[in-house]
Structure formats: C-alpha cells, structure tokens
Image (cartoon, one colour):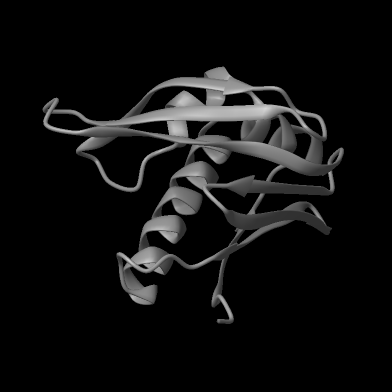
Length: 137
C-alpha cells in the first residue's frame, strides 16, 4: 500500500537563522506548536541530530485530552533540512531562503484515522501559528 504524502508550506519574512532557531528550540516550540486556540504544547524536548529523539506534549487547554507527538530525527542539515520518523511515518521539513524571507515546507505521510483534508488543515494551522510566532518576534 502506498502511503499518501501531504505537503503544507508557509513563507516567513524573517532571516533563515531566526526561522531555524524558532523551529528547533523547545522554548519556542511550546509557544507556537498548536493547531487551534483550545490546544497548547506543555513540554517539548529536542535532540537535534541524526538518531536524536524529539517530543512535544500536546494537550487540550480544558484538560480533557492530550498526547505525545514524538519521534526520531533521521537526517539533519542545519538551516536547510530536517527529516524525522514518528509512529512508523516519515516527515520532511525544508527551509528555503527566498530573498528576505524563508519558505518552510513540511511534507509527511498521511495516517488513516483522519481525512487528508483534516490532516492538511491541522498541520497548516500549526505552520501558520509558527509563522506568526516568528514574525511577532
């Protein structure tokens, strides 16, 4: 069975060094890693190297549910590319400088419990939050 890939992207008006730092620093991740206002990330760990582990604790703000988004980095090219494995799925994050901005493109393997549209919308919402976080400084 061929797993479907979903891709989302955003363009951020900020230097590459700043975009990369915000994407890979736990203190920043906690501030932007949510798909909606009623969710938040309460903890994040990053060991940014090939074979290193990462995790983010995502919880509903009302305390009704939560889960760990965790995996292993499989390839890291500083300020350019992050590839990782999570729950048997693969994801790739590309950082492409574009004049005074950076395009961040995330592609990942779809899962079966939510529609492709729901997954794309959720990941795009997180990426949009990330863009707002970086440009807000």
